[in-house]
Structure formats: structure tokens, C-alpha cells
Amino acid sequence: MAQHQVISPLPGIFYRRPSPDAPPYKQDGDPVKAGDIIGLVEVMKQFTEIQADVDGKVVRFLVENEAPVAPEEPLLLIETA
Amino acid sequence: MAIEVLKPGLATTVQDAGRPGYYHLGIPLSGALDQYALRLANLLVGNDEGAAALEAALLGPELVFRKPALVAVTGGEALPRLNGQPAPRNAAFAVKSDDRLAFDYMKLGARLYIAVAGGIDVPAVLGSRSTYGLGALGGFAGRKLAPGDVLPLRDAPAGRPGRAAPAELVPSYPKELELRVVTGLYFHRLTEESAATFFADVWTVAPEADRIGYRFRKGRALAFRPRRQPFGAGSDPSNIVDAGYPYGSIQVPGGVEPIILHRDAVSGGGYAMIGTVISADMDRIAQMQPNNTARFVRVEMAEALAARADYKARLGRLRAALAP
Image 1 (cartoon, each protein chain N blue to C red):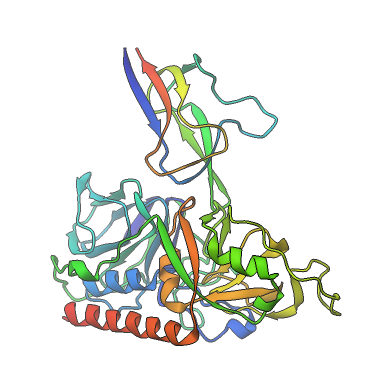
Image 2 (image 1 turned 90 degrees about the horizontal axis):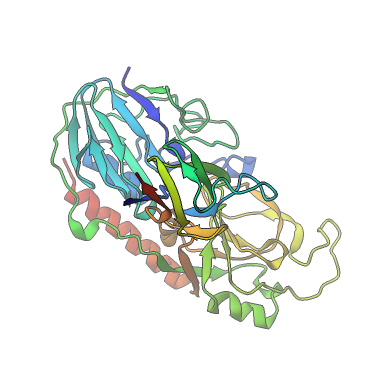
């Protein structure tokens, strides 16, 4: 089983949900397709959607909700088929 | 047709040396937030050092050139790629018609500058081609770039690829730095304890930081001395009767998060300014990413002026090194 990391293109604050009272975009174990939104990075008063770039299954998130992230920091581990 | 924007990045704008002279009318300085990096990029391609170039914050754009050009990329450390192949930073390189320029992630620094020989040919407004986004003024249509925008270029004589900046004149962009501050008119309004913790604490750049102001958090909250509310001032102790805001001044609304005003700032308002970052350090703020940290270091005016002289001397060495 190959594993793939989704990385943040930007510095900012990482959010796992579209709004504070909405469910997370993805949970551990969820199936994921390339293009699926897995979270948001907030910076300069803008929210950038982070998309998965492979198909597979969510192993786990590598950063917490509302954690600061740096450019090129891994956000999510995906198990690819 | 000259440069077509495929992907604009996060906030990419046309900026030049700026629009001084109108701040008293509410029109800010604008211009490249990192003036040194702008000047370096322009000198590399043989432009006037204050010519209009692109400033990209945190995420580089993807551009396609519709005619041959000479290009230089400076500032934040994001590897440029020309048609997918690594291109140099801090050196001039030639592009052909239909070449694509894109960037890897910005590992260090926060703003990259893309200068093209001749400069970006947008109309000058109040003497400058800089974009002032809040005022929808100048630059390309008064706004940040969007997919499909086409930027005209001014004609340029055939440039010289390969001109490179000497390594000692290329700045580095640390994730932790010290910013020198001259205390301001309202510094006395802080309590003795807060006057000390402001300089003792490590402050973290907040994700809201932008061209208007750089907001910091994670230091201890600052307390202002009790005072009788002056007529015309807001009720919070951090409020004052409205006054002009210097470029680089530091305000702390509610005593919570210091904000350093940068080149797109409003020109006045009702928050006490506890100090001003010295002019020689303003470029360094421009290259701070969110989550980078700073400590504020108190200096006196003589030291601020000496630092300004050093900055100018360094620019002088850069001009000499890159003279045509």
C-alpha cells in the first residue's frame, strides 16, 4: 500500500471544516478522490480550498484543526490503492 | 498581448516605487512592500529601479509570455520554473513567446517580485503604476490580478540575460527576526509593565497580515494607563483623539494585537501609536510569513538614521554592481 501526503501550498491557519458548526470535510478512513476538498487554509483574510491530488483512503490528518501551517507542510496522509 | 495570467496566485499586484506625496489626502504610499527586492529585480533586467513589476504574496502566479522578454525574479524563496524547468532567482533570464512561468512553494519570505524588461505598461495614476487595492486605484484595473488578465509591457531595448546579483547583496529571509522600533508619541500611555513586555515578548505574525498592516499576536496583552477619556476619543484606553498615522507606526487596538501599518495603510485614525518601525526594517516585514516571529528592539533616532544610511549605501552598492 503506497501512502501519499497532501501538502499545504501556503502558510496560514488550517481548518478541517467549511464553517465552525459544519462537519469536517473528511474523517479518518473516508474514501477520497483527487479534487475532493480536504480543508481550508486561511491567510490574508482569504480561505484557500485544499484539494486531494490522488484517489485513495484517508489514513489520518497530520495537523490539527486551526493549527498554523507552513508552505510545503504535509496536511493529510492518504493510502492509495 | 504581452503577459497573460493563467493563475494569479493569492494576491498578485502591479507595484512600483510607490505613490508618495498624497498620504495627507488619504492616498497611501503603496508600491512594492519590499522595495529592495523590487529594485534588485528591475536593475537585473536593465529597467529604472522603480519601474512597475509584479508583486506576488505567499503564492507565485502562473504566467504565459506572449512575446519574448527578459525577466528577473527576486524576493521570497520560491523556485521559478520556466516550462517546468528550474529558472534562476536573482538573475536575468530570457523567455520566448508562449513560455510559461510558474513557481514552487514559497519556502522562505513572503513576497516575490517579477520584473520584465521595459516594465508593466499600465497607466500611471498620481505619478505611480502601483496598485492600491482598497481604493481601487492604479495598477491593473485597481485590483489584484485575475485569471485571463493580459498585462501590456513597455518596449525595451534588447536586454542581457545572465546578469546576476552578487550573493552578498541578496537578502536572506529568516523566520525569526528583530525589528527595530523608535518609541512614539503615545508610548507613555502604556503601563510600565506593558512598556517592558512589548519589547521582551516574541510576537507571531497573524494570518491577517497584508499590505495594509502586519498584525502580530501571542505576546502578552498590553495595558494602557487609566486616563480621563478626552473629548473626541473612543472609550477604550487604546483610543486617542484622531491623529495622522505614520508609515511603519504600531497601534494596538484594545491592547491585544500590535499592528504595524505598511504601504497600503489608512492615513489616520483613533488608535494610540506606541512606536514606529524604522524605515530600514520595513522591507523585512514585507518578507515575514504568517507564523514567523519577531521581537521588537528599542532604538533611538540616531540608530534609526544610521540604519537608513546603511540601507541606502547597500542600494548604492547594488546599483554599482548592476550598472549597465
